[in-house]
Length: 471
Image 1: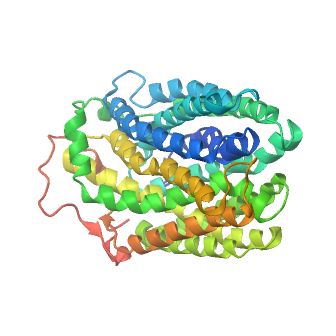
Image 2: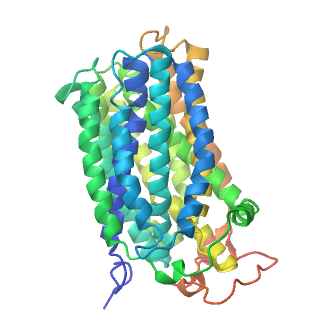
Image 3: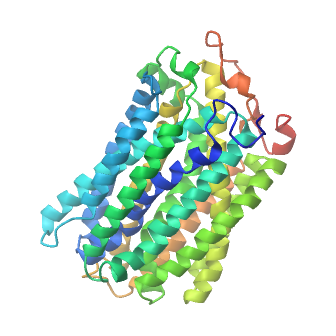
């Protein structure tokens, strides 16, 4: 007999086995995001202006191919399901591209270095998008009820935080002390090989155990243009997507700049990023239990709004830090806010997916999540522009040309920019409404697609708890 929240009902994927997939998908991309600037800009000498241009081009390409990959996943029909073939194909490709990304020859410079960086950055993001569109699409399918979904989501975010400890906090030690030095690149290549192998094994293990729902795959295959048009006409796509992007871009800035914040703003060896990142991640992991309970009592929307405010306060505190101890103290607040966003953001998106399936009679989670990924593509553009701005305003162009005050430059990059973004998100979240929890039977329409009601689906407004469906 199954119990609510355990995800282990007959024919269902146990929550822990689905969740562990997040460990595999997080290690490669977070090593890339966390070490790219240090590896290419500070060590190899890539000019920040070239970095900014590449990131804008890469974001545009990814914005185009991401919905296409999601749509192809929705249309896939095989005895292995819709999502598993893409997961099994994408895992080895991402691992291989990550190793190549961190294998740039030391002799490369100028345009050769730019091209190497551009090609493998785009390929890594493309295969990461393939994996995450399919992995994320499984969450609302495997766990229709919000309570079950919240448990599975908290477990997978916990695995993501474990991956972050490894791929972010431990990586600087491995790359600059264990396998290499602060001025060499060999340590990055060795670390990438190890992480790639781990990610491949974990993703394959998760994918082979995912039990997709056959009735989702037997429906008429959705068409691309009508589906895209339907999504972009949905107001919730824009309100939830843009508000969530404020959080996503802010964390992208933090992940890409933390090592140089430690080096320049705190005046410490890069290896000390282990302690700052470690405390943020540990607080985030512990906070998932608390935030999951808050979601159960007050609802996902209320908790989402609160988490935004806490995260913004954390960035304000981090700006005032003058040493490792005060930075760690501020990191506790950042970790608490980040934990809340991890526990709630995907639940808000999943409600939008439920409402779309109930209204249109088609399960197109892959395309919808990929469309939401469009806002994630803003991460690359904004981080590229933000890093370029350091050269314009503060004179930081590369490790060879750091300008007069790189410490203040990276304090602005890591604290001021994220604070502004999350403060905007906290205000915007107060005006966002999302559908109430959709009953599981409503998310699996058995008949023809129903006519969309003129008034739209019921939504949670400012008084979220009163609008929650009975549990």
